Image (cartoon, rainbow, N blue to C red; front, side, top):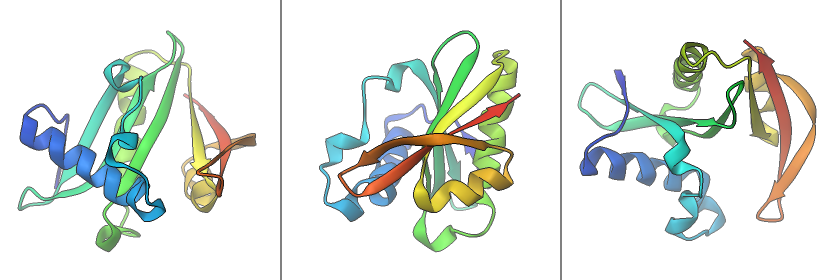
Length: 143
């Protein structure tokens, strides 16, 4: 396994396809909902298996000189529960430290709150409800 910053058209397609399959398609959202206005102001990472298949992805958005935001965390369905999300998260945190961010925030889907707690994030309250059904909790970790 390796973690890369997707740079070729093929790598970017794998990255966005994985995000779509895990984070949008199950709720019948359009493919273009996978991207937002902050894509260019973010570090994108893609984990590939030994056969160069996409298995996990994540993004560190640069909110300010002090704050990063983890977004678009996705692990392929068949690979969930194997620690890949933690590896992506640790990689993003390492990049945040290199940028000298003081803290990271994120909006965790309700089902992912325990995952982020295990990784040192603390809930700060409700954030928003996505697609009218997926509650998100704002969480923060001081670096």
